Image (cartoon, rainbow, N blue to C red; front, side, top):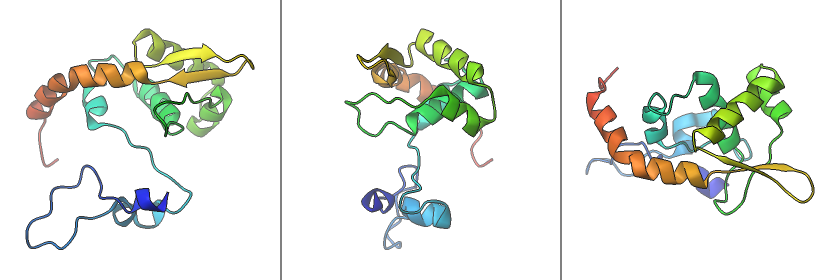
Length: 147
């Protein structure tokens, strides 16, 4: 994990010739990101497209909480709705409604393992975002920069 924390922040501007090295995620977040505390990588395209995808702030936060468990693209994740609900300060049913909406919107898929565990996969989200990146660039061009 330390190696990941020492990688340059993806949204950091390219260093000018006068700068020795780009800032790392660990430097950017200082003591807030430490060994074992982690961080969640979310494409900015997803943030820009949340209105296009008709996602409420609750939907987005549920999705980000699910993505916090997703490190290996080949593996499904299985956080409990109660865990996410406690983090967010909402009831379990709110999280379940959001995951259903995310599935209906084609942003995740749910399955049940042979052991009866509910799992989430993000292949559909990756495909949809990749397809919609041009729309995210249009939105970016319309945004007010510097605020």
